[in-house]
Length: 323
Image 1 (tube, rainbow, N blue to C red):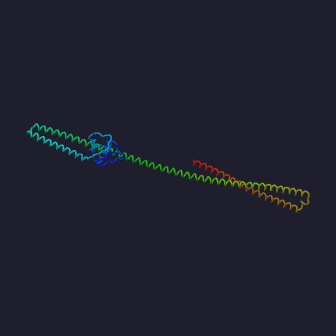
Image 2: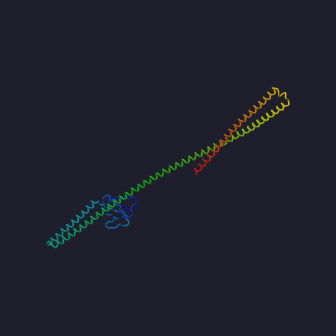
Image 3: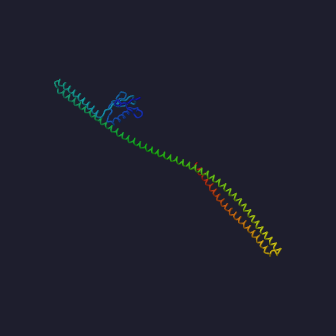
């Protein structure tokens, strides 16, 4: 498994270790730039890729070494001082050499020119190091800007995730409301079905009551017909008695003239009239009772029809809700 260390400490990545050394160099530079440090040596399988100027395509082990900007500056100063010391030593040796050759002016001028060249070279190297430091600082600033951009993007993604979570919670509340609504509809359907069953029972009861009323009405009609026949018979009987009395009166004139015969005739007529009036009163009461039974029967029939229609409507509503 590839191994990556920075300043002798193992580097732990989020996820898998990148397979390209150049990508690992960028990540380490980005992390160290936030700490004010810079990579000065990047060994890929034992070879310094920074000195080579290129990165290989793969690796087994990477070792990165870094210095802070102050340490890097101090290192450059020490190297410069060392080079200056070496130049000074060289100059001393050259002076001694030229002095040993009888302090030759020509040798001294050569030494001065060599010293001037060394100083110029040293200045050029210092300028190169300053440019390198400036470049590193610029890269560090660019990495900081990119890090800030990435943080802003991360915050935006987190806000989007929060928004999505809220929308999901809202959808779950709507689903819960819909389930409660379906449950209420089911309860209403059950109540409608129960009411339909009760209405059907009420219809059956009303129909039975209507049948009983119709039977009573039929019996009342039979009684009325019988009483009408009795009344007609009584009226015929009275008419026949009147005829008999009239015939008997015309046959025997002496009996008609007597007071007893008239009184008897009046009593019989009065009795017959009372019987007729009594039958007429009974017949009138029976007709009134019959009318009342008819009205009650009509009301019951209307109630049965209304209950039946209500039951049918409830049954249709129940079927629609079940669909």
